[in-house]
Length: 126
Image (cartoon, rainbow, N blue to C red; front, top):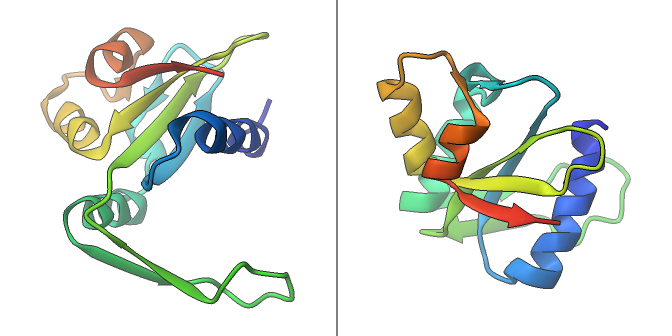
């Protein structure tokens, strides 16, 4: 299972169950933890801006049928979505960006464990 595979499943879940505006960065790990470095600085910045301010983005014209040219997100919930993958896994965690950043700064580890994700995030199931 790759990130693109789980992204499709989580997008279906968001449409069917979450049904709210938000910004989401989806991550998957096959290991026992997810390195904090898996969230690139520009991704963390974009999530933080979407959560606390005005984030506008132009969708690249690459010959696809894009839904529109650009969008702006204003003070929306922003999450790092993490799945600690095992065969048949349905559980994932939606971690608010503020919680992710705090955990990265305060944690003595360099990675997030499923146990900590359950404490700082919202447990969800596909």
